Image (tube, rainbow, N blue to C red; front, top):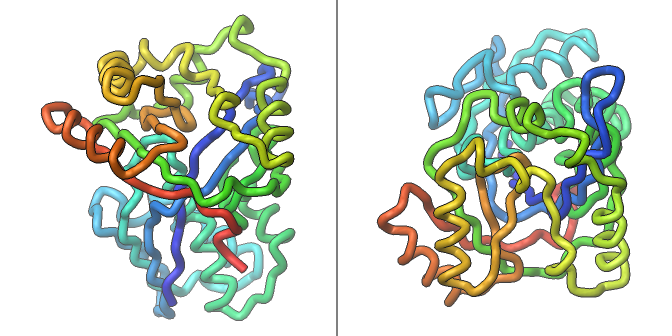
Amino acid sequence: MRVSAFAKLNLTLEVLGRREDGYHEVRTVIQAIDLADELEISAGPTLRVECNDPSLNGKGNLVWQAAQALAQHCGRPPRAHIHIKKGIPVGMGLGGGSSDAAAALLGLNRLWGLGLPLSELSRLAATLGSDVPYFLRGGAALAQGRGELVEPLPSLPDTAVTLICPRTTLEGKTARLYAELTPAHYGDGGATRRLVENLTAGRDVADSLHNVFEAVAFRMFPMLEDLYGLVERVTGRRPHLSGAGPALFCLPSGEEEYFRLARALQPCQAEAYFVRTLSRPQQD
């Protein structure tokens, strides 16, 4: 069977503080986009996870961990062959690894005939990573706690987005970005509340976008300052960071804007993608 694993954007991302368990308390609105990885899942004598990017093969892939966790949860051997065809750039803040893990849980739940409800899969997904529970449903959602507490929201209407992805990222990026935050960067969730209100009322959200990591990302990704400047010169507006970056996005966008940015980025170590928001959950 084939299962699509869609990317996401963070329309807001606020950090409220550091928790006693070492995680950070976050408020974020997440929106799915139609950029996707594809998982081919079939029966096999043992567990095997392969990818068209060989560096993502095997036990280090979150898909492997998802399959092992689901099999252990149900008391069965993890027998499956999973092949991942990457379409989402790796390490960009677009959630590709978490989305792949969620797609694996959904696909294996069907392949193995387990019949587990989404609520049970969500509890298991939360042990794999903060974003994984969101990707079981997709669409738009408010995520709280460390990101694992997910409430569905009305999705953006079908909206064009231009993504700008540098060709390099950082090892241990997310942890390093969080380590750069100080109490001065912490918020009260107000930016997220405003965006939720606008989204629920069907109002434009372009002026409500917010990401706390934009305050520290330039120190960690030296190329971002030039990319921000280039996008501003070409489009007349500032792009936004998704997740811990370094992917940037312009929302809303259009084909003409995308082509202008793609041409302008040709001398740079970055690539543009023209995508659209997904206005309904990715899985039934």
